[in-house]
Structure formats: C-alpha cells, structure tokens
Image (cartoon, rainbow, N blue to C red):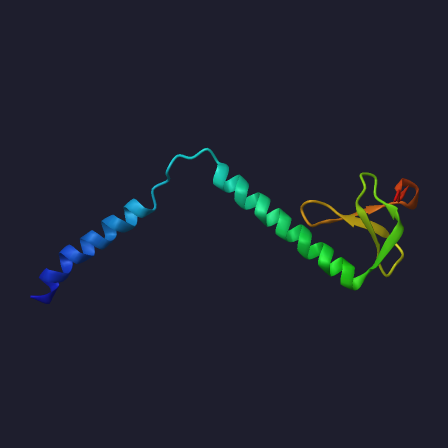
Length: 98
C-alpha cells in the first residue's frame, strides 16, 4: 500500500528535477559577470599576497602604470587583471611620476 502512494511522489520529484535542469536562453551576461568578479577577486588576492610576501618597488611602475613588486630572486613583476604575475625586465620599467 505504501508503494502505491510513493509512486506519484517519486514521479513528481523526477519530473521537477528534469525541469529544473533545463537551460534557459540568456545573453551570456551572467557568465561574463561571474568571470569579471572572479578575475577581480583573484587580482586583489594576488596583490595582497604580493604586498605581504615581496617588496614593493616605489620609484618605478610597470609599462602601463602597474605597481611593481620584487620577489626573493630580485625579479620584477606586476599582477595583471586576472591575478597572474607578469615578470618584466628592468629596462621596461618607467620612473614613477608624482
């Protein structure tokens, strides 16, 4: 008797699961917003870690005005918009204008 009552509930559950997984058409704006937020979070986290771990080069900036850090091996780098370290040579650094 309990199996007979359970069958409609089980069928309803399965049909709701199928409907909830349907893809709705969108412009891709949600995906772009999520990527943008993720990149910004990664950039802020990487800059925070670099500020604690490595020295900041105060008198020079990167090719486009980025903050330059110096790691333990005396390599110069900046953190890009995706949170990755981009190593640059000393010759590509510019004087900081104040």
